[in-house]
Length: 369
Image 1: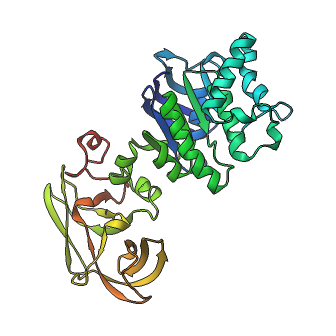
Image 2: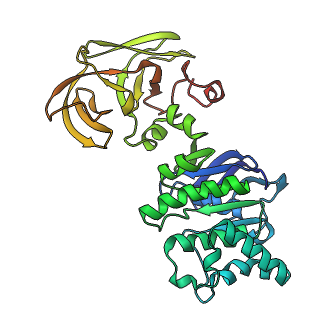
Image 3: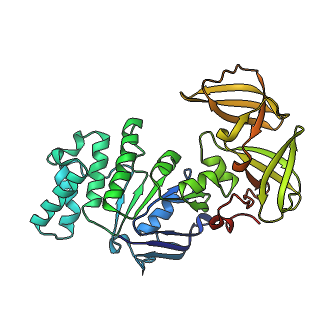
């Protein structure tokens, strides 16, 4: 397998900028996910890595080789599409064997490679079955098998689970990650589903309007969002924002919310007076009757071991994830507190996070200030 290096990648279609000056590295053997809503540029980026689209500017390196202007057939990659792209008139064996036949591989070697791959994917018992009669999960395995059988430098997957129902999708998420770990393949995977991304990825690039908002591990992106967009996009429910306007000097700082002092994380750099936003995940909101910050329970969502409360405050609606055994009624007035060590602080005008002492040193250069 091979490292993929993308440098200042830029793609325009007329006046429309689809991908804007993207930089990232997919390490050899990593499972890398490009995450974002429809139209954010993730599939266009994948197609440029594959050679199906040529960039307007920038460079793509595959295994140390510049492939920027090479067409797809000249790159040692395998592409798995959302709609499987199987040949309906062929059985499973012939679908998987097709790329090897196109390469001119001897028949005996093709048979051995197909059977080995089918056993790996647990579809060896349906090799002689027609693909048109298969369930969605089995069709997806066949599509994966056709890619794996070539043993390329890297795998590129464009929302391959998008057409599956929930049960099959959950199963395939686990199987894809298990397969990746067994063959140690360099994989670039595109999805709009944060649960798929957080479950499978070694590294994630969150995209928005053609820009990579943040690049990092699932833990870094969840615990230390670099922008308000990432904080809002990742998490269910997403991060709460409490807006305020204050100067935040280096070191410790406190703000007052409805007469309740909230201690903020220590800032690495000074911050000018201006509009700020305090970010707190729902699981880090505490029900504290001694707090001066109060609100009325507007709604409750039961989730088994926990429940998500929607609380109407003078600072807007806040979500709190609390144990299910705690009893609340609609309209109850409750006090709220925050777990200080988990808070994020954002510049509300730019949407960028301010670097604090809880920001990992490796991420601080990506934060405002």
